[in-house]
Each structure stands twice: as structure tokens, then as C-alpha cells.
Amino acid sequence: MSIRIFLLSLPFIFYLNHQVYSQPNPQDKILKISKKNLSREFNNAVINFYTTPKEAKIIINDSLYGISPLEKVFLQNGHHKIEIVHPEYIPVYKEIEVDHYEYTLTAELEGKYGYIFFPDKSLKVRIDCSDVDIENKVKVEYGKRQFAVFDIKDSSVVNEKYYVRGNHDLTVSVKKNQFSIRNLLLSVVVPGLGQISDGSYLEGLGFFIPLVTSVGIYIDATASYNDQFENYKKLSEDYSRSSTELQLQGTKLKVIEAQNELNNIANREKIFGWISAGIFVLNLVDTALFHTFEDRLEFISRPVIPNVNHTGYLINVNIKL
Image: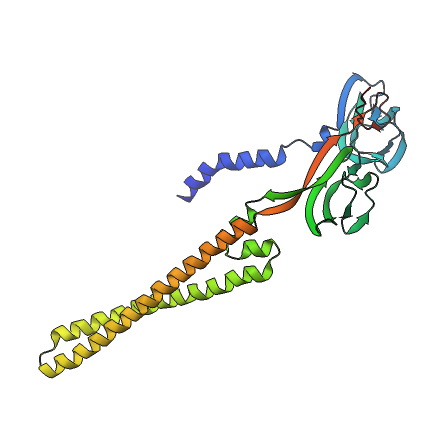
């Protein structure tokens, strides 16, 4: 059986292996390699480097070879580590295998910095826990950044994370009262959690604690009802087997007491079942009415257009005549 399962899983294992180890390197889109004529020197390869923008450092096997564009670099046949470094752009790393050919390596570097614009100048902004001046565009290194935006008009604070891309203009604005189903779903999973997620901690606990208490009493009543019902069945059987009048009277009283206790437990179970359901529904109504609308940040990212000479990047500006 185990051998059959293993054989059936082989195609899936092969697929996963192909997905993990056969995915292209993202930097292959940035660094392109082509080869053509045989090198005149049989033991050496000839490599030409061209980058956009120019003036990037070409580092081979941890040694600086020059600044791009760099041509006619002779390398011995074999394995080499290539690094292309520019202070304003994301560095490129590539390991290559060369033989006696002439190679051309072209790289279109991606910018290291994004530029963030805030149309509303009345905001106070912190990026990665540091205050920033939003009167002009804010220069930020690429990567995931934490934005904290304080609106002075209504004293609201919006916190969100966003991945800033290099060579992109990013416009950030606050959108008021945006519908979000997140808090409602949280309140469905754990009553009160939607309110806590929205910052209303006492209100959330005001739903969570009573609901947990009432559910606990309901569960305890259900367990007690099952135990008492077994006792009631046993007493009823004893009553049916009683042979004397005295035994009948004594057992009958016990059966009546057990039945009354069973009814009391059933009533308690029903009451706290309804209380639990009521708290849960009230929690959902409260979340839907007061905690599903929130202020959110709107991010609009646009790439910066490269200029004709490929020496840098220009801002795309629309001019009306």
C-alpha cells in the first residue's frame, strides 16, 4: 500500500521540484546575456558590459574591473561572479559560466529609491517611525514601509504597510469612511474581536466576556441535563419495578424530584442559549453599524519614464498649452 502511494505521488513530487528549482531568476529580466563569435584566445572569454544607466561599477569575483560601458574584458574559461553596482539603483548579482566566446551583458537597472507625494499638506506623516516633511516629495528606499498618517482635522490616525518600488512616483492620500468587511468577519469568528481591532477595547471585551460566560453556563447546563436525564431514567425503571406500596410512594417522590430538576436544568439551558445567541447577534449588529467603516490610505504608483540618453530617469509631467 505504501509503495503504491509513493508511486502515485511521484508526479506531484516531480512537479514541486520543477516549480522550486526551475523558476527563472528575477534578475534574469534585468541582466541579459548573449554570446556570438568565438574568442581568438582559446582559454579566455571576452565580455562587454552595457548598463542603463551608465557609470555603474562592474565587479567580477570581488574585484573592481571598471565603470560601464566596459568592453573587451578578458576572463578565463569557467565560473565567475558578476556584480553591477550603482549608488542610486538596486545592485545586480549574477553567477555565470563562460568559455571561449565573446559575450555581451546588458543590464537595465531598477531604481533604489521611490518618490512619495502627499497632496494634502495638512497631514502629519511618519514612515518607519520617522517624521517626514511632506512639503516636497519624500525620497524613500525601495522595500516594505510602515506609514502612519495623522489627520489634524479630525485627529484620526491611519497605519498601513506598503511596498515602495524604486523608480516609481507614489501618491498617498487618505480616504475617509471606507467600507471594510474585515472587522465583521473577525466578530463572526471571535465576538468582540472586530471592536478590538477597531480600537474599541472595552466595547470588545464587553461582548466577549459575557458571551464566554453565558456559553460556559449553557455548556455546563447541557452536561448536567444529560447526567440528570440518566438519573431520571434509572429512577423511572426503579419505580416500574417496585413491588410494594411503600416502595412505590418512595420511588415516586424521587422521580418527581428528578423530573423537576430536569425541567429546571432545561430552562437554564434554554435561557442561556438564547442569551448567547442574543449577545452574538448584537455583537454583529454593533460591528456592522459602527466598526466596518474606516479611514484607509490610497496608494497610486506610477513608473518614472527613462530619458533618451539612458543616463537617468525623468518625471512624467503633463503640460497644457
